[in-house]
Length: 443
Ligand SMILES: Nc1ncnc2c1ncn2[C@@H]1O[C@H](COP(=O)(O)OP(=O)(O)OP(=O)(O)O)[C@@H](O)[C@H]1O
Ligand SMILES: [Mg+2]
Image (tube, rainbow, N blue to C red; front, side, top):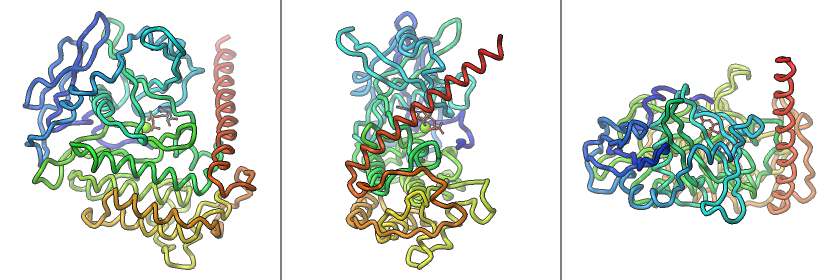
């Protein structure tokens, strides 16, 4: 799903004077904040250009530390700075066989990096390579480094390091993350090539993602608004635990005494809060709206926007209104791929929670810690007594799962692991086939 508007203008941090290169011959590092006027200083031309020129924020004056300042204090020491050669070696020179995804930022490759001292086992990583022709540029790269360099939570993806080099043959910006072997929630909910997620794993993913956002909103010394909460940014680890990725759009929340940050509107169609889109007023409650959208995606297995459906079903939030949580018809929205194995009570409670997250007035939406609380309550219903009355889909269309032991999340996880492996193999085969066809065409 595409991001919208002003992508090139992304990440105008209020005080963001972020960058920090300590240039070696070819590698650009990140710099310390040097000015209070919101301008970043770069030490060489390769380095970081201004992160923020001016601020339109309603809450721009504050004594609290900014993310770039916090980054200088701790993030800068935690991240490893890679030479381009190390990245090339790690990815077999960006081999297509190692390409695992492509987003607005650029290609994502699986890689294997050597430990810094050269001793011990290699680490498997995911490497994002900024596409110089892409919409999302250096500012987003920098925001990602600074935010992920500062945060630390089990439900946020770990940034291992970065590579930034400028040379005659072009500039390079790369990000090196811990590898998340089970793709994204988006893949598992919407891509039929992947196994459907069992109910209890869906709930655990929702809860973990909510805890990640709660940390950003409520547990940091600076509030962070994530601004790009969506299923494709929820990555899944080997145990299907969720980790939020992509902090290129994140920004600091309003400073004390201010209700919102005024900013250019950025995010993803179908997930951004309408009040934010209309006014440009960004608050943590904008993330809460997006969370409500994802809750409905988890319940229904449908994307927030699906243009290939009948007109009255294309917009998920409009469609689900016809099946209120307290009505008999409610179960008609449930994902047929769940094959009735969900708790009807829990599903109703989650739909009610989603509705509050989707309140028109931002102030009526719950905080993320309230969302966490409600999700935990809904998760207490363990009986898988759901009903599905398929609309135009039948469960027979979907992958068959061994369901004997599905009620236990541990065994469901084992099954998922196996199926995910099969999916990965299929992907590799598909990629190989693509390369072979290309080679055949060239000869
Ligand atoms: N740390 C990671 N480990 C494993 N795979 C990853 C990792 N980061 C990204 N990927 C893979 O790369 C894909 C593309 O990710 P990316 O964030 O670039 O794009 P997106 O989320 O699909 O779109 P957008 O640009 O709108 O965020 C992901 O769906 C995932 O499959
Ligand atoms: Mg993403």
